[in-house]
Amino acid sequence: MEAASDAIVIGAGASGLAAARTLSDHDLKVVVLEARGRIGGRVFTLHDPSSPVPIELGAEFIHGRPGETFHIVEAANLAACDVVGANLDIRHDACARPHDHDEIASVLARLDEKLPESWSFARFLRSKLVMGLPERSLELARAYVEGLYAAPADKLAAVAVREAERSLGTPGPEPSFRVLSGYDRVMEWLRAGLGPAELHLRTVVREVRWQPGLVEVSAVSPDGRDLSFRAPKLVVTLPVGVLKARPDARGAVRFDPALEAKRDALARLEMGAAVRITLRFRSRFWERLHTRDGSCSFADVSFLHSADAYFPTWWTQLPIRAPLWVGWSGGHAAIRLGRLGETALLARAIGSLASLLQAAPTAIGAELDGYYVHDWQHDPFTRGAYSYIPIGGLRGPSELARPIADTLFFAGEATEPPTSSGTVAGAIASGRRAAREVLASYRRP
Image (tube, rainbow, N blue to C red):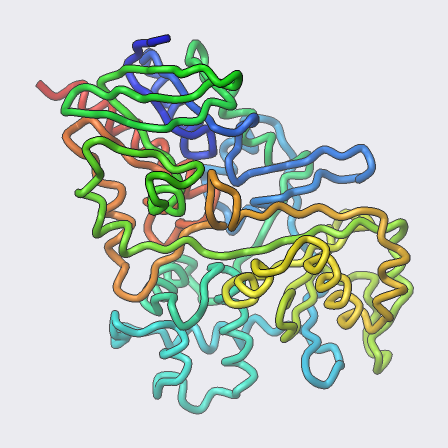
């Protein structure tokens, strides 16, 4: 089967849907090809009747107040709530302390203009630039950065952290919000505006043959048939992990001719490792527990932080009181977890949470009613959590975003600068930017 259109979009994640919606708004005939049986990409929401709230397997938080996301929240009449509650740190002495954002900010504020581009964030933490700061503050900053950027501190470019933090105005963690009905509702709003655009789910793209002004995409249908799509323009929203995969790897897309113009850009970008697991319990039993020294109740805790080697960060659903804990791991901790099977991963999660709540793992396990996890590192259509900028890679996003021959256009969170890469808002912005580039190319003589 062969179909012709004005533009093809590979991927129905946030960036692909945003690109397709923008192109459709300008009366272009668009075809969207998505390998999965759902839209959203790394926005993956489960609506399990056993859970009082939606379960997010991918993106969960709106970080800060990005217009791209909040415009959709308002347009779709969705409710977004502030993430509130106690933010505690339980480390080596097993006593709870407030997780002091000022301590982290004091470290990140030292990321100044003198910072060499050849430094990793770990190198920065060993430098004279942080001289005089307490070791605890440095430890907290490392944990914050590895968790947020899903990157090992010894590989993550310090200048990328500087640029991202500078955009916030003040260094350190920013306010966060949740979409109460589920992040997938944002994706559904984008999908609802596609108009006459064709959306093909469970359609796995195998090869892209292209020349200036013509693209032919070969794909496989849900029932195994070979499909072919043609258009003058192609928007590629594949994650960095997929773009860097071997052509014969599962989920990879072969380009003919190869994307030589993107070789350097892809070498300047890496895919971060992150693992999240949601534990659903029979009750909110932790609300009856206190820290070992009796100084704090867990009833109003939103976040717990620790030096745990596997799951250093946990959070509840506050301000919604639901019987759920989410364990989060990024960077080196996530890489360690990636070597475990699901049974061992669950055991690590239960042990980690038990240690923080200062309860026996058997007691925590007895309360467990279910769990949810998705292995993004081994997902063939993602191959990682989200992108990060390694040492020397500051120009990677802008190079990856650059169109080729007014024919191939690139979107996705990895094509955004450090200020918004790795976020849903960044993905949406990138899709709209790529769509504008397609429209501009049609207007050029």
